Image (cartoon, rainbow, N blue to C red; front, side):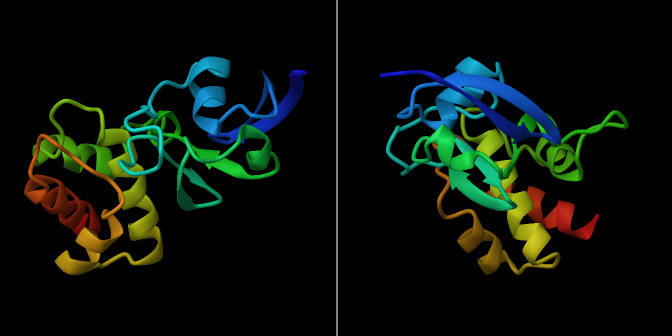
Length: 154
């Protein structure tokens, strides 16, 4: 397949990437742009480890073609922190033990960000529903929910 040069707006910057038409957004981010925060878990959109925000919505980047993201704003975990420090969600995940092996953490944090952007004061049930597309095999979710609640209160 013929490769093409595309421009993706990632973490506030325009970045050029050479892709085949069938290249997934996950692969363009990881291999083309060196942004390895999004992880490949299942490869079929079931686990959420590859979650990024596209125009503010959580998207499984393993299911989206890179060419489909042209013209959109993409936020990866690498773009969440600022020069001043970590994002409150990142701080809360560390403080409340909402991370262990780290495979699901970037996607979980971005899904939580999308939730809090839409609903700044979610109930526990709303947090659990907002994170339902992200699987974690290590934490049992309680500490993740506590971290999101703490970030909402910050």
